[in-house]
Image 1 (cartoon, rainbow, N blue to C red):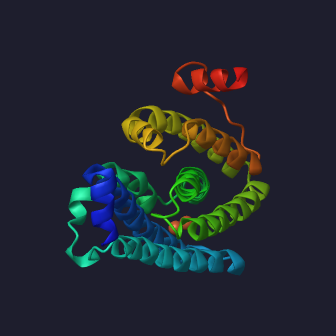
Image 2: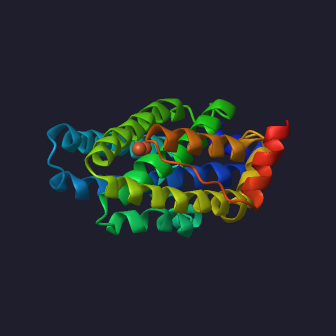
Image 3: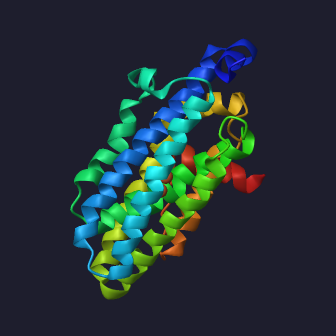
Length: 243
Ligand SMILES: [Fe+2]
Ligand SMILES: [Fe+2]
């Protein structure tokens, strides 16, 4: 029996839809990241850093293929799949600002550090750990996302060393992304996270693991994480500290 039919029989249509939503949205995110990398290749003058972008885009091209293959492995045809049914419009806003940004610091902090180094890496790590049967390639992709994070850290450190203004700007973006993280985890995809936890696709402490990862990533480039004084993130941090 084809895997997609088995999933519908054993676990229900909504589980198949959840898996397809993840694969389709990851696929389109990769295409957006390829475009961001391509935009910055001619603007980089340090050769090693220029080549990092070429490697980065090359990795994402293969990741997009893995996500496409993930759909085919379910026994479905990618070309015949109604991608619009699964594509989340808020996914596009996650990258549209970065696609059009002329601020390299915004792209480094927003893409390499935050979108890839925090959000994508936590999602990939947990989905691979909890459901390797549906996401067999996610471990490999996770390793390479870690490389993209390192590329970002390398360039950010060089930029901060050369310019205090660049560091200060990065700190501003870091402060904005703390608030984005809170809104993203406790509002934007709150229901999806709760469903993912309920179905054991995500760990019960998924949000706090993402928060911890945020702290680790930003600390790696010496940015301060200024947590909000109140709100769900602050409450979750307090609860975690008491456990
Ligand atoms: Fe990727
Ligand atoms: Fe990446």
